[in-house]
Length: 110
Image 1 (cartoon, rainbow, N blue to C red):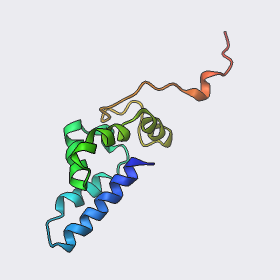
Image 2: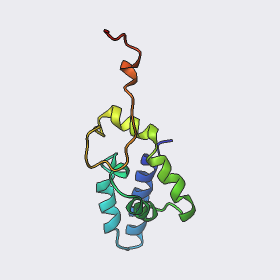
Image 3: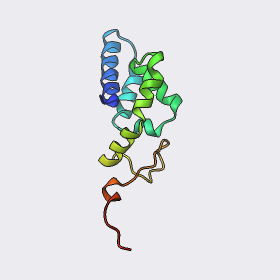
Image 4: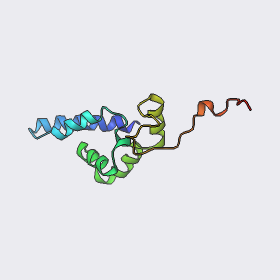
């Protein structure tokens, strides 16, 4: 399951819920804009990530688990492959050492 999509859907639901109750949804609208960047959770610190997750409705006891899924090495590699993260991007705070598997087994000229 793509946790990022789940967070996006949860935020949309929270916006609709807040609107239906005539409550302020400005922060969730800002989160909606921020979530347009799939690499968001790699660019912000853990404290801010937790605040976003709480605001979209993730329960306190699930914060760490959800956060770990959002910043996993597999997600990092996927975003790298899709071009959503660049290896030399200075805005990325959470990085993993990645190997270019496509070139790993190619013959090298010695």
